[in-house]
Amino acid sequence: MTLPRAFALVLFCLSPALAAPSALAQDEDWDNLPPGEHRELVYALCSGCHSAQLVAQQGLNRHRWDKLLDWMVEEQGMAELDPETRDQVLDYLESELGEDSRG
Ligand code: HEC
Image (tube, rainbow, N blue to C red; front, side):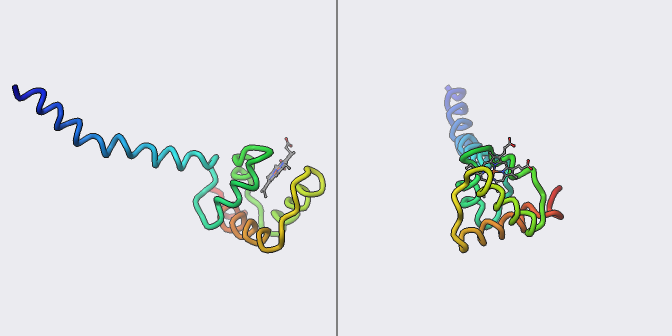
């Protein structure tokens, strides 16, 4: 019988393709945060109280992101970030979610 063998061969060939969607799904887990340096950090810090989607949909310059972080700390109860972490967060926000980076 050749049919079951052909079937097995097809399954075998498909298995890498079946494994691939998990890599895609992973990317969607970032709530639309674009890939970039410190994305993980921003996701971890900013998706606790609201969806990171709320962050991803904003496009601000560095100064306005900076003010927004002040507001998040002073009015929304976010823990103050140490200067180095804050810098990394701002780097990401500025370069990936800056005023000009909205598509
Ligand atoms: C301690 C909780 C908390 C954390 C942590 C937090 N936020 Fe927020 N954030 C809020 C609340 C509360 C709102 C107001 C939500 C609303 O208006 O419904 C908000 C709103 C926002 C908005 C929308 C502002 C607007 O004008 O509508 C943005 C953008 C935002 N946060 C960015 C961030 C970023 C970036 C971080 C990480 C550095 C962060 N948030 C972390 C509580 C938090």
